Every structure is written in structure tokens, then in C-alpha cells.
Length: 330
Image (cartoon, rainbow, N blue to C red; front, side, top):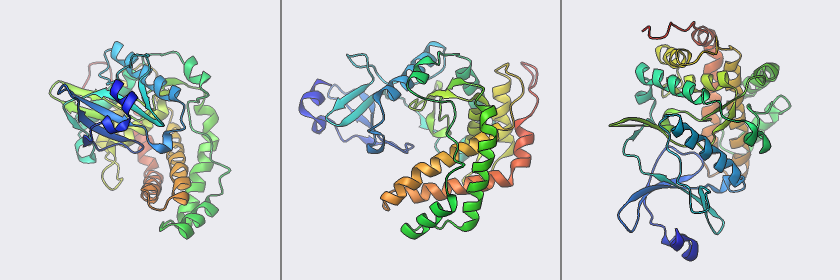
């Protein structure tokens, strides 16, 4: 650490690139004493984010460890902060976990794994952590409404300035979901918990001793039913976005049998669409600035997921509002 502080990033070994991250460069490196750590270099698109955001996320990870949840928090440095600043670059250091990241839909579609994901999410929500630090940082539990976005003009701009294949039908779909999300947002906003924020398969590692949950960067305030809807669809969607019913139901069942919060709110499924809209907007802004990045591909994948959700909402509502079984019943 001292060498990095005094001599800059040239002292950081190149390491082995790790897959799965969208926003940052993540590598496994070997230190001079032979030990291995994972280093996350904060992406330039997140460089303006307050370091408090990362500190709060890591505080949730450390709380999870205290609650016997298999989290992998970043190391705290000698100043008690998880980020090492080297010039304009921020670095976080993590223990090197030997295991396999569940980065493909094929691995994650196993109903037993999906059930465990639901159980993990419920245990995170049951920690009942203080909300004040996140509110002080200006965070809310859900994403802002996108009702006022001129989707047709945005889609037209993307088609004109990038190689996007979006269509007028896609613009109408985005408008539909945006209006639906604006309607349910007031009701969903009444419930607040502290969650992981991105409990997708790519953030769970399988190893000889079980599973470890990584990447707590987005941990913070959440609407619990909406996060359940997001996690259920993340874990049950195949390579083409198609939803596997048994996997989806397994996530929800694992959650409901671990918590005692009653039946899910079906409007949380629309909350999941609100999250996808926010992700679309983030990447659309970047695509209009940088044609060489992966942003157009992300945009088109997001629109595809919104189409799939629109086409399967009848089944999703039925699967999401299942009645939990009695504890211990299989």
C-alpha cells in the first residue's frame, strides 16, 4: 500500500482480469509476499461518485458477515476506509476467494441454487440495518420515475447517432413501462429495507465450503419486494431472456420461507421494470457520447428484457404471489 501511495500505479502488478463487472476493472494480483488479492479499480464513469457510497456499501457487507451471511467485504485500510486513492484512481482490495462465479444463466437456472438465492436475500433484508446513513447521503429506496422522458426522441437519437437497431415499437414499450412505473411508485416507496442491490448470479461464488456473496457496491436502501422481483428474474432468465418458471418460483419460495413479511406485492414486478429503465437511460447517455463502448449492446439487451417481461406478466404475477409453505415443508 505504501509503495502504491508513494510510487503510483506502476507498482501495481498487471494481474489476471476477472469477468462479471460492468463498471470497473477487476483483477486478481499476486503481491510481493506471494499472497493473492482481488483489486477493483473504480471505473472512470464512477469516479465522481462520492467515496461515501463505497464506504456505505462495504459497511453493509461487514454487517452481513456479523449476521453469518457469507459476504466478502473489502479490506479496511489503515485509515479505516476501504478505498486507496492513488492520484485520481480509487482502488478497493478484497480477499481472494477460490471458487467459480455463477456468471452464466445455465449455472444459475438450477432451482436449488435459485432457492438459496432467495434465502440469502431474505437474510440480508432481515438484518434490519439503520437507514439513516443512506438517507443522509441522499439515497432513496427506488429509482426515479422516468415518465417525463421523451422516449421516442431518445430512441430516434440513438438510431441516428449510433448503430442501434431500436424501433418505434421499442419506444412505445419504454413509454408503457415508464407510465406503469410512475403509477406504482408511490405505493412501492412506502416500504424500505437495506439490501444487496445487485444479487445476480455473477455476484455469487460457489466453492468447496458453500457460497460467497461479492460486490456490495450497490448495497443500500431498497424496496424489499422489488429487490425480490429483480433477483427472481436475474436468476431465472436464460441466455435469450426467457424465464424459467421453476427457477423463478424457487427464488420466491426461498425468500418467503425465510422471512415473515406476508405475501409479495405484485406491483414490485413493475418496480423491476423501473430498474431496467434506469439502466437503459444510464447507458443511453453514454452511448450518445461514446460509440465505441458496450453501451448500445446493453441498451438493446435491456429493451429485450422489457419485451420479455411484458409478454410474460400473467405468468410472472402468478409465480410471484405464491403462498409460502410452512417452515420446514418441502
